[in-house]
Amino acid sequence: MAEPSRRKPRADARRNKDRLLAEADAVFRQDGTNASLESVARRAGVAIGTLYGHFPSRRALIGSLLSERNQALFDHGQELLTGSAPAQALIRWVHAVVEHAAAYQGLAALLADGLDDRESELHASCVRMTDISDRLIVNAREAGALRRDVTGADIFALMNAAAWTREHMPPEQADRLVALTMDGMLIQAPNGSRTAEQGRGQNP
Image (tube, rainbow, N blue to C red; front, side, top):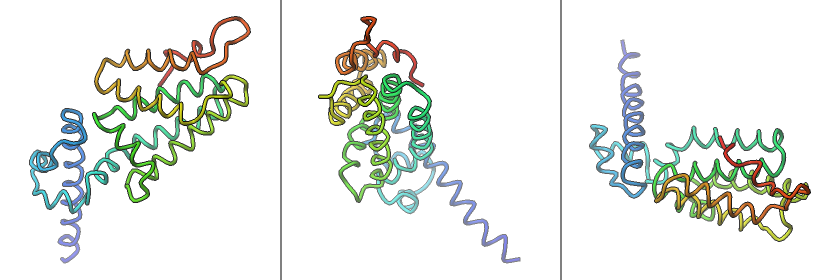
């Protein structure tokens, strides 16, 4: 008879966690990552202490929200590393990261901070994202598609700028920023067209 009573709290906790994640997603989409966590708990119908019981910090909550999206992004990056021409792969990756980082207003800044903060719940995913970026950059450079003077820092600056643009302006404006900047970073093909043209409009 004791078995059902032991399972019920776990089921309730799971439901509470799922509700908190669903409401956090809605609140962050509307108000950004700095939105009130009290409003998230209230919308989920739980006390703020319950929220912190599941997610000790704002970054922990955001990390849980991004878990599935992170994995999808990383899987996409691995496919690009092996299944696309280096220039196209880099362009598509930049577009994918920009879209990922602009899911919530303020997320791009949190991800940038997470890369340098080993204590952040976002650090591990930021490191993996950076690793994929670096490998794609090396592939494009070794293939002669990327200018030698272009650094990883340049690509990351572009992704951050485009993510910020996407947060505040229509997505088309961010795509235009990426396309124009990548045109300057990639080496002109022998036929006179820039390799950046090949990857436009093909981001996932």
